Image (cartoon, one colour):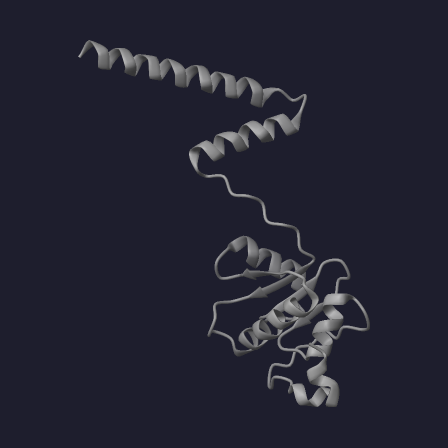
Length: 169
């Protein structure tokens, strides 16, 4: 009985000292990087740390698979584009996070109001709904004019791009 109380008291003292040390370092405003390292160290210890995702210029606001035919069609084309150009398009499911929905509203600006919405953050080019391969390639590379498409009634046919439509990617 005596030993267990002894170790419980020692553990409480250790936690208190560790907390005070953490607060002392955290309140120090001389170096923000030290604060971040300490906080991230505690998060790693607690198992709540998540590595930040790499920054990508290309965003695709989408929804769950099977909900929107446009989103499913564009998912296939965007996957082909990623393989062809060796780029990463970050998919943001607006049904999974309110932050993603707010970002969608900000990037959309009331023009599209539909999914998927593809945004190139470096050029400002946007594609709303389904699109052609050529337009998708222009959107990703920043070459040529990207059309802000919003074809709500019919998905564009790849054959309408011309004979070289399959050679795009």
